[in-house]
Image (cartoon, rainbow, N blue to C red; front, side, top):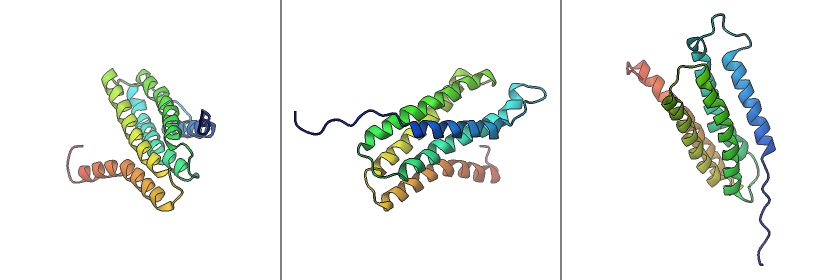
Length: 167
């Protein structure tokens, strides 16, 4: 056989650890340390929306920032696919149990999950294209693109609400 041996399949342990810390921190920020006096689905709604915003910012800004600040990857597609499997698996563990404390329907939960997964896959495509090189220019542009994808939608939504559009 000719060629070099395939690169080993290694779990990104640092990513798993950092993503877990991000999720725990997001949960603490969103829900606080004390339970509500009258626990109901409406008492958790604001905290869950905050949690989803923290989750989305970690997926669209935190993870790309981590990968784009590292050196060039030997196998960028494999690296990104493995990262996406790890990250999206963690998202499933967060999203689906939220139905226990909310009145979300199955279709609403699936829509939230699909939206987060779709945007994360799009960020993954941008990250994959940028980590093939050590040049700063493409990496900076990729990070700007990921930040724009994450922040531009909510900014336009706020601008629309301020102009009287029912978002």
